[in-house]
Amino acid sequence: MKNIYSNIFPFNKKTLLKSVAYLKKGNVVGLPTETVYGLAGNAYSKKSVNKIYKLKKRPKFNPLIVHYFNHKDAKNDVIFNENFFKLYKKFCPGPITFVLKKKKKSKIKSSVTANLNTLAIRFPSHRIVRSVLKKINFPLAMPSANLFTNISPVNARDVADEFRKNIKVIINGGDSKIGIESTVIDLTRNPKILRPGIIGPEIINRFLKVSIRKKNSKLKSPGMLKKHYSPGIPIFLNQKTFIKKHAFITFGNKYKNNKNCFNLSKKSDLKEAASNLYKTFRKIKKQGFKKIYVMKIPNQGPGIAINDRLKRAAN
Ligand code: TXA
Ligand code: MG
Image 1 (cartoon, rainbow, N blue to C red):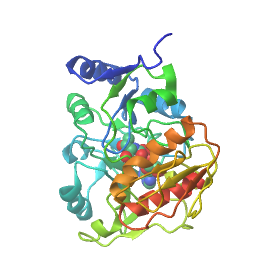
Image 2: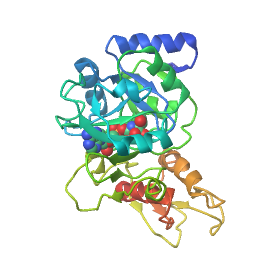
Image 3: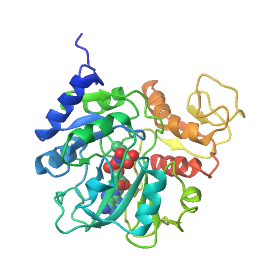
Image 4: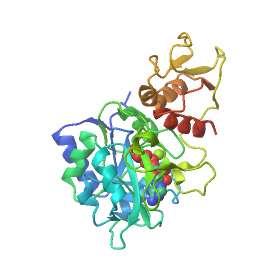
């Protein structure tokens, strides 16, 4: 049998150069980041950006995040402000994305931003994506490496399972440590969290006053589409009882571990729970369960991001 994972490569000097060569030619590459795996392409190349949208089957109105090695590399593309530097100093490189005004002379392709006059930028901390960024002279447009509305991949095999042979190079960087997507914060006005992540409002509030996007406010971040991050089977939230034939996602030590129980964190650690969420969805789906029950997860710290993803998955 032909190995269906033959497009996954270990990270070394040779595969680093191979990835760089691919990106320079306008092709896309699957890369690990500390949050989730991304589908990377040259943000200055129309060809690359088109490939990303096409492969993901992503609607063109949903803009992409652009990734840089450091803030200096982004200076021709966005207008920085004081709030940006406050958070950059504290959290970058790391799992946070800033929405800023795009510069008129920026070379970022308009399809990247879905024609908005703002641009979402991020500085990932993962050593593999950073070594790629160091070797190229363009930034990487890089959405999560999953088909539109599916859950994000947290290891190289997840990426291969999404795209099969449609992508030629995926670099294996092991499991993504954080396991859910970056916090997206709009800094073009009074700071507002558009997508919660592991860096939550309590932490950001220590440095600047931030609000969270309200449920019904005008669609500002299309990733905030109600149905998203879906494992493709019905999910029922805040459940107390468990039914043996369905998968039950638990947290803490309240429920004994049964064959159908999937514990996000036995020690009730919300950070650990976040890192296990997508992995657990995929495991459950692979085992053929038809429904997922989920117990109530505390809505604080990383729990805010977990509940955000759960709600969207359940929609
Ligand atoms: O952790 C992450 O951010 C991962 C890794 C690969 O870096 N990337 C990621 O990208 O999650 P994606 O494309 O799956 O999600 C990007 C989110 C979407 O919700 C999108 O609507 C929002 O960022 N976004 C992008 N540009 C925006 C803009 N100019 N204004 C508001 N939201 C924007
Ligand atoms: Mg995504």
